[in-house]
Image (cartoon, rainbow, N blue to C red):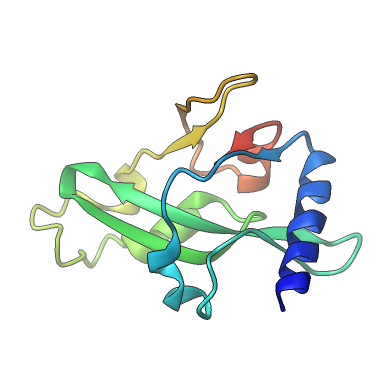
Length: 143
């Protein structure tokens, strides 16, 4: 099992390099999300067959002002972030911690943390929620 995880990690890195995308140091301890990931620490994984192969990313969404977070075990990079946000924050229903009803998918701004070229500290940029994540992540070094 350990060898298959190493092989998957190597295959993912090679696949991402073709797009100029790299994986940098992990920013958060993801061990608490193992249960949502079959008992394994979350990592990106390849799915599908050539030429339709793509990456499913573990995604941690942080809502600083509400001191809340969500974990998505496998986000298909062919979809836009707004697709996920529509399911999580529909207009007709609010999450229990959103007492003011501020968190509605079409009102949310998302920022992606990444490592700028040659840097060991991260920066953030605002994500186009309507763009497929494969386009958003291109040419980035990601934690």
